[in-house]
Length: 217
Ligand SMILES: C[S@@+](CC[C@H](N)C(=O)[O-])C[C@H]1O[C@@H](n2cnc3c(N)ncnc32)[C@H](O)[C@@H]1O
Image (cartoon, rainbow, N blue to C red; front, side):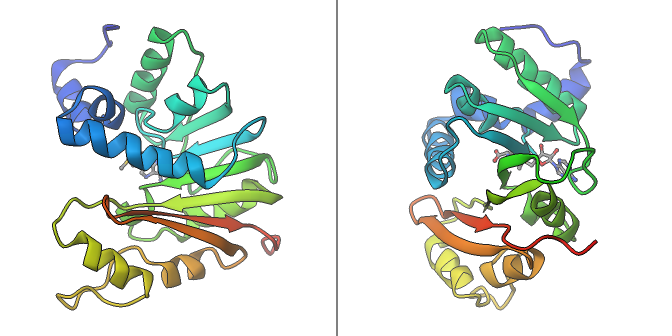
């Protein structure tokens, strides 16, 4: 394992959110859960020969499997430490990661420059996901695909809750999910949803959108 140039406190903080480590070296449940949700993401769109953007990539649970398949992917995250770790994992595997430290809500990237844009398990963390999803629309080619996925939940009631969420309803406890299709439709106002894939066992879903109208200038 590559040594990371991080002090122990920084490292402990990152370890907590190192989803690639969780996927490959975590508990039995994590090693089952993460590959299965990543397979759901990869199965949602064909990335072969495409220019792919992974927004909020963390330490690479999606980027690294894509790189292993030879996909051209740019990994973007706000956290330099996550990106540093992603790059180290790639190097360990003889791969070259392309990374960009940036706010996904204000990307230094050209319009229409990617065929596939992933926003996986990010939206539910934000108080206002609108700007990130508008940027996803802007940088995605008109015939491209935007995949918005997550969040995940291993709560025993997650199956009921996910079904409720997919209907656009409220949770059984009366609170609204931070992430549901009607709200996504609002944030991705210039895109059309083509498909949603749901893994009830994981309580995880991926939606696939086409940015069929250009953002207003
Ligand atoms: C829960 S992780 C998801 C990682 C990965 N996409 C996955 O599916 O496992 C969320 C990531 O989003 C990043 N993030 C949060 N807000 C962001 C922003 N405004 N711009 C870029 N990255 C952001 C965090 O640093 C973190 O690495």
